[in-house]
Amino acid sequence: MRELVVEADGGSRGNPGPAGYGAVVLDPATGETLAEAAEYIGVATNNVAEYRGLIAGLRAALDLAPDAVVRVRMDSKLVVEQMSGRWKIKHPDMKPLAAEAARAFPADRVRYEWIPRERNKHADRLANEAMDAGGRGEQWSPRDTSAARVAAALPPSGPPGDAKAGAARAREALSSVAGAPAVGKRSAGRNDWAQPPVPGTAPQDPPAAEPAPASAGAAATAPPDLSAPATFVLLRHGETVLTSEKRFSGSGGSDPELSEAGRRQAAAVADALAARGTIQHIVSSPLVRCRQTAETVAARLGLDVVVDEGLRETDFGAWEGLTFAEVRERHPEDLDAWLASAKAAPTGGGESFTAVARRVAAARDRLAAAHAGRTVLLVSHVTPIKTLVRLALGAPPESLFKMELSAASLSAVAYYADGNASVRLLNDTSHLRR
Image 1 (cartoon, rainbow, N blue to C red):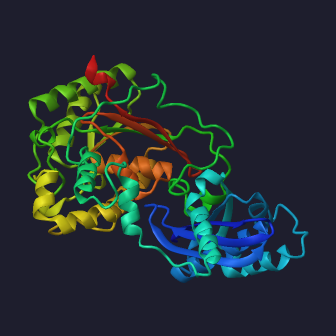
Image 2 (image 1 turned 90 degrees about the vertical axis):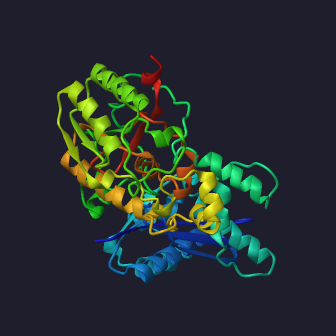
Image 3 (image 1 turned 120 degrees about the horizontal axis):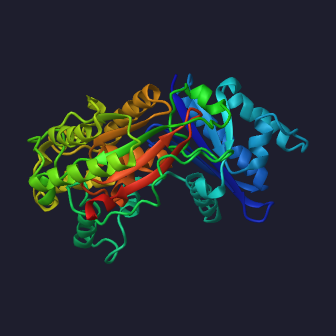
């Protein structure tokens, strides 16, 4: 059964005062925005606006997938507790709104979760946009998010609208996708892959919890899981000749071998993992550079390597083997579209980030179910590893452009049976500097 995430918010400038709500429906596997709703509702209280946002979000979810399971995430403790049946509804204005919300989507397939306000920014932004529009005597309408995604993905540099500055910022942000070297972050300590979960912590998911081995419905209602998680230690393969030249290197190109530098990196990470002594299984992308890296580690640890197709790199289509500058020169419109939307694919039948996220999420769920309570080394590539991290954090697709991931770097994510995920490490390259 499909799962949807609804995030909703409402606000009143005066309480009561000019009020509005915002709601967004998200794909929990990819973080993709599926629908948005917002409206200025005139003079009302915060609580009324919150309920109106919930109703709008549930109706949008019903339009998208009437048979889905819905997880509602709101920063209104009142609405979450009342709709969950734990608090009585005493105020006469709230009773009809709660009843309307209960009718908006089959109640037995809706679960409610409180989140802090800082994790509800999307719906909050929509509510404020609706109130701003109402203040101008206008109706809220969805904005073109493509330009916004690019702006959010790239650090500020140069005046707005400066195409050359934008290209330079995009080139810098995408450098690790094309294999640029980066300064790694040191591990906080030797036990960073085996920290116990903190009881009662809120789920860390996209935009809710990472899908766990349990079903979506069970994950939404299960108590906090204090058992050992499935821990994925994420190893990016060592360098190839294309890495050092900062060229796009995906699953549709020449499938290069490790360079001499890459073989040294693989040996160094093998020594580091042997010293740590926590890896129990090794799973690799099918591409040569990953299998060579994985086999170097496996020989040092005395383990076998299992290949999983879901861990392969993005297919960059006609961009395979090209530098960012060459792609900008030959395929400028396609590159702009790719930077603007996770749904856009590289020229020539390449793979979009949305498609990659679905493939990687399926592999994650499969491997987490097979290795519950174990520590597994996944040897993969830039995009799949970044995708696993961003899904664990509940971050939007453009966050892929904001992460550095060096060759032969280590990251780690733990997955719990209740649906929680915990990022333990990102881009550690300390083993390469010894």
